[in-house]
Length: 240
Image 1 (cartoon, rainbow, N blue to C red):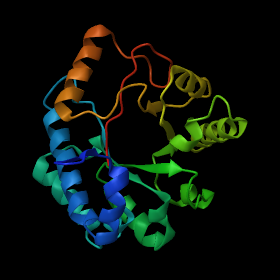
Image 2: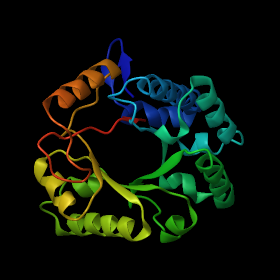
Image 3: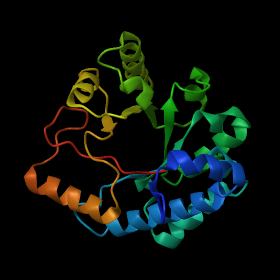
Image 4: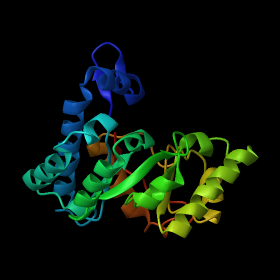
């Protein structure tokens, strides 16, 4: 998600999302993003090359705490015709700080219809292994702050390897974000990381350009097995 400002040009979400959180505008923005993502899932389901795509959508703590959040997601899925199993909701650890029972109940209700969950920026907030034990999470995301210097900083390398190992033990998928070089990807692949997200594959793209990107990749070669080094990397689509 990017804001095309008439004077400032393309504004990154890192600049306007915090302000949206403070003012409450994150709620209508969040609903619009969810509806847009689900409509796209439904459109892609009609095309053989894209029908298997899963779209990940970031959900703010403020949005997730809404009493009717589960009903909102179900309503959007019904209205757009999107398949619930193609929708993944990304939560940060800030969502998990309060009303844990309510959080678990909402997650379980959505998982019951096929929606999956990813824990974003894992390790940068109030990390607690008890979250992983209690919450129905499907995926851990290694924060880009650990990936950036993974080849030169032994501490970052150790943290990334530990997150991958933890995911494997708990039966969770692991995706690394901020992957910009083949060296970073190959290092993570050696330890069994499942997927990657970052500028090595592509910078953020509008939907039309993303579909062109996918078509070019499909014409060049079949993708390698997930988590394996490849000369034809495939992107992860993420709507924040």
